[in-house]
Length: 149
Image (cartoon, rainbow, N blue to C red; front, side, top):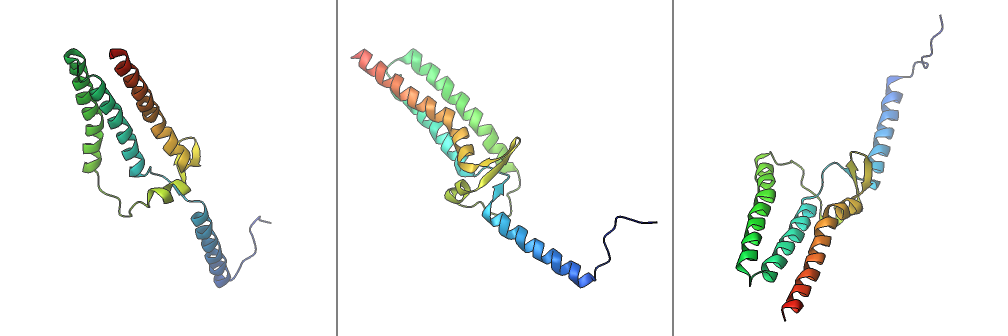
């Protein structure tokens, strides 16, 4: 009875072959780092964009008490929106390996549900909406300021 098995190799040759493949895999991983988690600096950038957006509203509507009340409500909502996930993330155990710098993170790749993408693209996807809203809020604030004058 014939089988599809490969002929028997000496055990030392098998270990040498596996060690060589392991070294190749490590070298390949260094060239194309694909991370599973987003860098905390990306989240900080997004929160800074939202804080700037709220600051524009505070500066723009500081003169009107009824509008300022709505800004206070929005600020409390934003504090809860960002505060609850922050508190929950602090309850989780910290990863043993530290994060690389933000520049090193951007040079690598990020594993997503749809497949790996460049980390810079992931950064752009996370901060694009808050950054655009901040820029639009600045434009609206300038328009309101000149309309009052």
